[in-house]
Length: 303
Image 1 (spheres, one colour):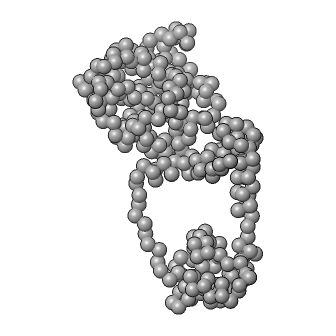
Image 2 (image 1 turned 120 degrees about the vertical axis):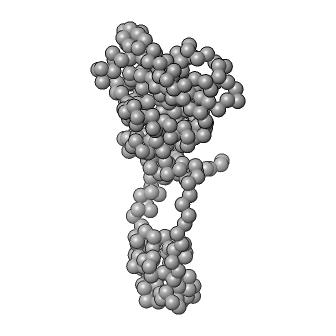
Image 3 (image 1 turned 120 degrees about the horizontal axis):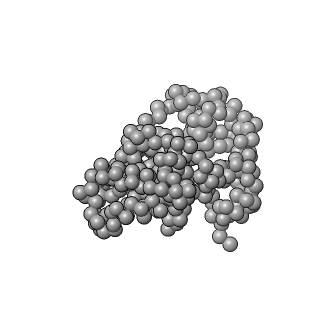
């Protein structure tokens, strides 16, 4: 039987679901893994917290305290001499000692080391942004979206999608819909670059003072950097599963209404933002059966 280690993403998902009060078997069912895997993960996590290095490596830490000298006896030298002098005693690796120093677990500090720590160049790639989102739990899979959002009783939970024009054309329309009130906003986008899309969405939300409590998007490449907007707004961004447009049903329904004004295959290059504002106004003013034939503007007054 093949065994795969838990990825960082899986560990974050497990932590979130367990904090919501779900049982280990329920979490295992949601994530598609065996419940014993979660049990072992919890046990290892607890064990790592409980280990006291001062007890386990007492002899080594005392030796390091007595013999370390930044001028003549570095950490590497101390470990080498300790292994020769204390054959049966527990001895950590060099990397482990540096980890203790970084975590403040022993008497040594960075300023007492032989070499100054080099300042690493700041990385700004998408992988680093993804890791930040994962660690800070800003961008999450839609399976972790709370159930109360599904009930549509609270305004501010948005769905965002893009409407494309002619084939091989960069121009597109970004549609934003409130899941509760069905309020629609349309933004003209001239490029498909993820950072450009993130910028115009953030600026549009601020300019129009749109209430935002959560954001749901699909897996389109143009939304890869939208976690930056979620971070600035202090909300969660939920990513839909691939090829599951029904998870953004409100968005898809509104996009169909927009297509009544802008049919598929029509070029979007010459369509200005003011025309999109008119389309959004017409759709928001339209009576809707789901609201007993009241318009979105009438429903918004209740929230």
